[in-house]
Image (tube, rainbow, N blue to C red; front, side):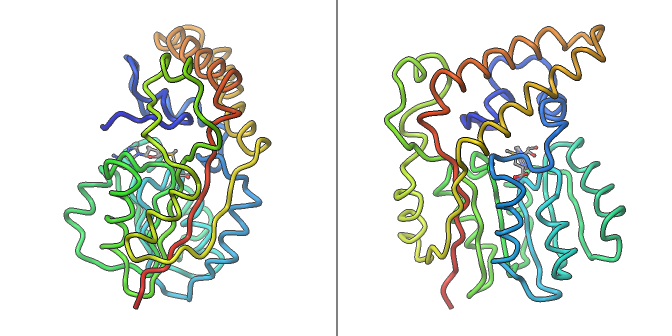
Length: 266
Ligand SMILES: C[S@@+](CC[C@H](N)C(=O)[O-])C[C@H]1O[C@@H](n2cnc3c(N)ncnc32)[C@H](O)[C@@H]1O
C-alpha cells in the first residue's frame, strides 16, 4: 500500500508492525462513517445526489459501506463497494444483509486500483472518499473515477486540504509534506482542469473533526481495557497517543477536509 499521509489514517502505515487493517478496525470500531464528515452531512449529501432507481454506483474504499447502503435504502440504487480491508468488507456484507438485502449490492475485498484495472463497466455515480493514495493522489483519483463514470454522471471525492500553512514542527514529525495537499480552491480547480464541473462541496468543521479523531481514542481505550493481553495493545496505545498529540497540537488548526461533487460532461 502507498504511504498514507492523511491525518485520519496515518496510523495505518508508519512503522506499523501490527496488521494495519486490524489497527484500523480497532480504532474505527465506534465509527459509522470513516471520514471526518458528520452523519448529518452525509445524509445531506445523499439527499442532494438523489440517484435514480436502478442506477449503478461504485464506491472505491467503501469502508463500512454506509454511503452505498444508504443510497440503496433511499433510492434503490445497485452497485459495487470495494475495500482492501477484510474487516470492512465483512461489516459491509452484514450491513447489506441486515438493512437492504433486496438491493443488488456487491462488496469486494481487493485493492481499488486493481479493481479499476479489471473493471470495464461505466457507473452513473463513482466515489472515493478518503483514500486518494490508491490512485497516487487526488489528481490520479479524479482521472480514475472520471474514466469509470458515464458521461453526465457524478463523481464524489473526499480529500484533505490546507486551511492554513502547515506547521514546520508537524512536517518534521510525521510523514506529511506540504505538497501532499492543496487548498480547497486547488481541489476544486484540479477537477475543473480535468474537464469536470464542481457542483458542490461539504467541509468538515472542528466539531466533525473532533468527533472523528476522538472516537478513535475512545475505541482504542475500549480495546485496551478489554484486551490487555493482546500482543498489539502496547503498540496500539503508543500510536494513538502520538496521533492524538499531533492532532491537538497542530492539525486541528491547519488541515481541512472536504467532499467534492463533480459532474462529468456529456
Ligand atoms: C478513511 S477510510 C474511508 C472509508 C469510507 N470511504 C468512508 O468514508 O467511510 C479509508 C478506507 O480505504 C480503505 N483502503 C485503503 N487502501 C485501500 C486500497 N488500496 N484499496 C481499497 N481500499 C483501500 C481502508 O480499508 C479504509 O476503509
